[in-house]
Amino acid sequence: MARQRAAWAEAKQREAEAIAQQLAKPSKWDKDCPDLKAALADTVLVDAAWLGRLADEGGVLPRCQDLPPGVRVTLAEMEKWRSFAVLGVLVVSYPW
Image (cartoon, rainbow, N blue to C red):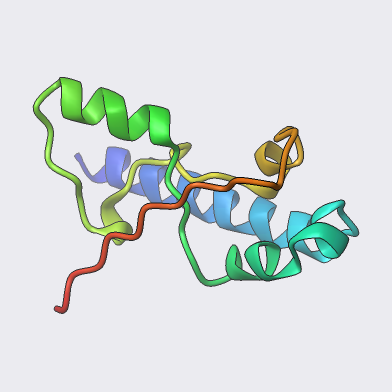
C-alpha cells in the first residue's frame, strides 16, 4: 500500500512538472486564449471522458488532491483542440 501511494505521488509530481514545462513554452493559446492557458498553473481541468466513465461506473468525484494521475487536461492536449470558439468548462467547487 505504501509503495502504491509513493508511485501515485511520484506520477502526480511528474504530471505537475510536465504541465509547468508546457506552460513555460510558447503556444497557440498565448494569442487566442491566454487566460485559459494561465489558469492551468493553478486550476485543474479534468478530462470529460474520465468524468463520464466515472459516472457510468457509479463512482464519486474525488477531491482534487485525490484525482488519479492522467485525468488532468494538459496544455499538450489542449493544443490538439481545433476550435477556440466554444470551450465548455464545468466548474465543481466545494466550500471545505
